[in-house]
Length: 280
Image (tube, rainbow, N blue to C red):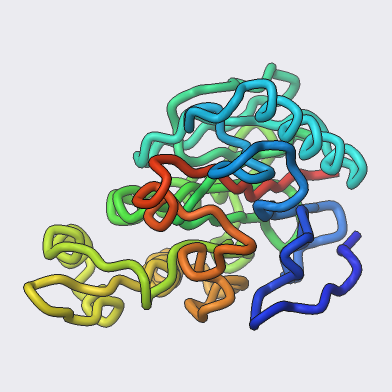
């Protein structure tokens, strides 16, 4: 069930006091997803207030309360236990076996599940979270796509796992995959060095269109555009969410989102948002 409409402030996606919001995409009825903002938690500045990261020097007791609030909201929407990974900017994808315990804290940047209830969580604070399902809602998946993971093939690995045959059933055509891109640092704020552009260009020359030259050999990079390019190359054409416009930008939308690049420079630390998906 979607949240009630909120009056956007200054072009924001939702009102700044909205802690949980629902992706706008045509996921099947048995698939649920949500994304958090920085509102609705108990952490003090600079983690204020719904920080979900345990690795950012926040008070562990505050993080535990914040995670409990997220878990309660997921339960309210028909989901089950939250799966938190140790995200390492790689391309490993964890595939949940039916009836198996959740592999909490495993080093991976993607997760796949056909289990009802198991809730996949990707935490971000400038990187791009990507949620997946198929048109029949047989499986759900999630990926953490910072520039290293995106250049290194995390979306390729996640889509490959999603469409491959497994114990939960036969394979799926890539054309049946739906993807939703969450908030990330936007193309007007993500300035990178030439090594980042080269990492993409090495394997995907078309990535050149997602980089705008700046002074001193620097570039502005468009993460959502790079993700859409990779998904299109993988045969995934039904892509929703982040279109690279300002309301989706974690760096500029400070009332809504944490941003590692913005807040760490000023405060030394920042919190983490979460994008979650599950089958009911």
